[in-house]
Image (cartoon, rainbow, N blue to C red; front, side, top):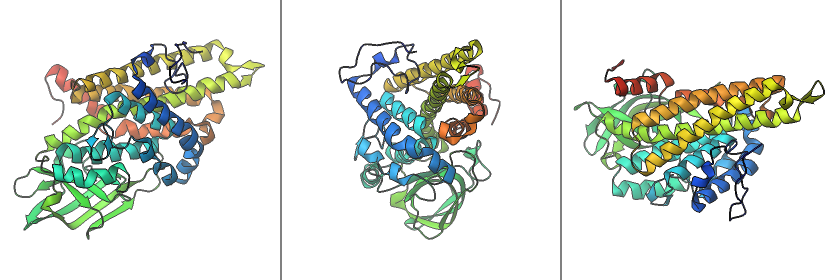
Length: 405
């Protein structure tokens, strides 16, 4: 059922059947011992702490705080940020963490991506040394929950046209506007809010204390995807932010884009995690489920479908391994990350639809861990830039012609 490899010196399993699909292309051989240890620590956490409660939390649309609060002990919050209590993980380790969390629970992976990949990364990339020292340690320990406020009710894909404003008033800035679909926005202690300077028209980033008068957040109800992570509608009505909480490196929307470019590759890894969960569930189910006196997996058409799923899954793995290698070299571009995100989310949607079908009527039961992933991948398909927008961005690069403004 899986290609065998030599035993790992740490005594870990010799193959990655459950967590990386069937390792036909021997990606394991490219893991360093440290990367393997990080991967296995998160994998065990997912198997023993996340999966037993994921479906219940999803069904109740409740955040799993008992699980979330264990993340700092894994030493992964903050991803590749170095110093100020952050782990300074290499790109491959960051990807493996994202993949494994998504394999267990897309909502948990999304919470983590907002905290580590958007809020903390914005402060690390665009903040001052003083701001990094002031904010990042508490965020790495989850004593401070972060959010990233960019999307607006009328501006998603065209977020460059954001309408939230910031005007200078003495030593403060006064922010007015609205944000929508802000992950963690209702539970965050600090939200990185993007607003347009009323005088210059430039886009600035502000680390907003959510207890400030005028900041109001409400959870968006009745979601059919990522149900156990809360997204919020945010109103900013005369919110005063000191100049010391403005990110000095955020002067244009291009700076905002620099942060987003680092997280699109993460989306490709998250999609791989969702797809892996679907493939594993389908393989396990078809081996155990008997119809007409024999396992479903013995039928030719079922084997054909499983093999096609595996082919797409291994392709997704290779995409992820390559973008990790490019990131390590400092050679990953926004379009490369966007192409990986576009490819992997599309393939994951297909794999999960196949898994759901192979499980028959049982495929819609949350206890079988397919329907939840099938619903959650829809969010990954949309956030951080839709498939359509990623396609047009890559299309612009390869043709030199822009199909959108």
